[in-house]
Image 1 (cartoon, rainbow, N blue to C red):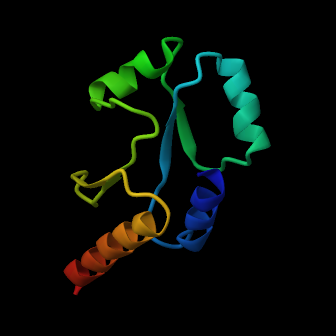
Image 2 (cartoon, rainbow, N blue to C red):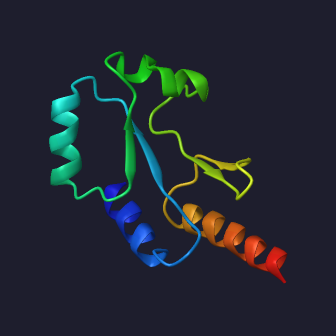
Length: 103
């Protein structure tokens, strides 16, 4: 998913959009290397030494990895588990809604 996420971040770099990741690797040092090797430029949080059982996934009721939430500008989850082009469409739709609210 990293290549698609990189392209999405690049395409929307001048838009009110943020991609945030949560990583379930138990080894934080290994995670740092992965983020560097994969050229992850967006904020990626570590879920702690319990991996998939860490505090972030528990708070958001994540049951499987990867889980994708697309939130609107008010922080409401509007889409779940959309990937690829479906993720692009979801984000684009929310950006259109945001633009319409400004008018």
